[in-house]
Length: 464
Image (cartoon, rainbow, N blue to C red; front, side, top):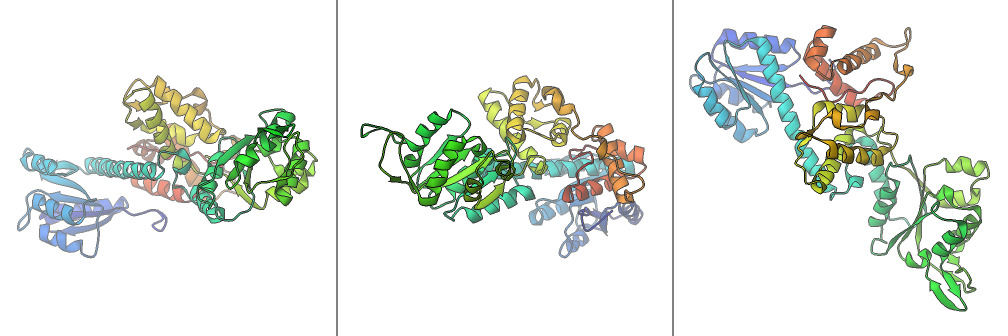
């Protein structure tokens, strides 16, 4: 266990029986929990002034201040704390009352320790799901329903920060990234955050038409002194012109675009008058434009004009932590369209989504969820509802650690993640196979999330 990279769960035990209190505390410490104990409710309340627990395990009947009163007072001060009550075997009235008042679970006394571990992990998992759902709602609300601004992973937040940083500068921007990774969103976000937000955002898809048609669309058309078509440069005056798939722009048009970027003037097709446009140009590409310029397939002088500021849209593989947020957004969207009531994803389905490499990025994820919503037969998306190709691993033999050469930490990581995949994400089953405690696996998973490593299996969604 690495306490600096994995949060330690704090458990407060309140029980007036010294032997039971001490035994529970020692056994939980051996499982990796941080434990404090108290002989009654008042002493337990005194502990939280300087030590905040994640879980309270309390006997229902104690002198001075009983478990139910302790639970109520603790919840007033720490509403997020999870609470498990213990009650004498055969006497469940107190436990029922505690559950009615908001306890998370209960245990009969004498406590069977393996049962306590199961209940404790179930309660912690339930709390984690509640927090995750709250985070989902917050993220989806903050994103205004737009998938482009949904994300909390470090690569994505850094990408957004860079967009916000350069949005106000009146320079050309080149956005690179894989197909479906959100380059169009980045361009629109730049426009929305810039002083030009009040102007138009217009798009030219550079590979959509022949050169003559693209030229008319970009520069406009004039015949016998009469304007037949204004053109996108005129339409984007004071706003933003977005050149999608700039690598597909024909060489002849590349020269004319370069001329515009140099002196901000252009001429309509069939016209002679020099016109001006104050359009900011943002271009995007899925190809290595610098290499294309070296090979003569793209003008190097135009590349340097466009590449004043370079942004790279992160792939979905780099921002796996955002997959649950994005998947839930798409599920809500398509469930509403299909008039279906779907609550979310099963743990196995979410594990499949998290473990896929998504070569098509956001676009592929959206199409996958749309299909799953149509095929869903229950209240949740299950693996059977997902496309077959998601079950195929995208990692080859290079994922195996090299021996000799791999450290013990790397070998442990590989063993834990491979075992979790084999048992479908069950921490208890994996722990039994590996001969370690479920808590150690949870700690290691938290550590792996904070320090991602390529070339090893990715198992994030686990179950007891």
